Image (cartoon, rainbow, N blue to C red):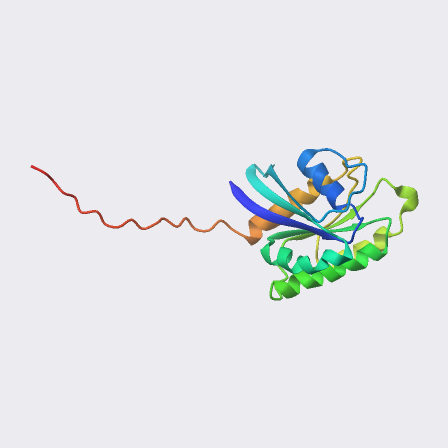
Length: 188
């Protein structure tokens, strides 16, 4: 089974925890409780390949953004989250994207999915689809509009990321441990 660690990043209050908990536990968190750091596990089958995901839900609060570097160094795939109801949160996604590339040594093949949350809050939407589409086209990254509350496109996000990680991180060639030569001793 393939194993990957995924880091969920974004500004505070954009719905990172709601997205993560919906994916891992299939429940919706009604109340907002700022996260410092939560780690979850889920096995997901994508294209008939079982994959174990360790999902790190991070803090969006300003005082914890210093931890992002630690998370980014250890992450193999990233879900960058903003709220469709909060235009300022989209700018934070671009900052995080650039930070990932910088920390990963300029490598732009890092698996990343851009996620707009709160799709169900149609009347509160601030970010036009056309704005997002032009950004993700420029960045060359996949994008999903989701609703954790209504469970819309949540699984799609993580399936896309798994597909990217499978391509980006092929299984290491099987390294067999060299056993010391055993001299056989025959007792007669």
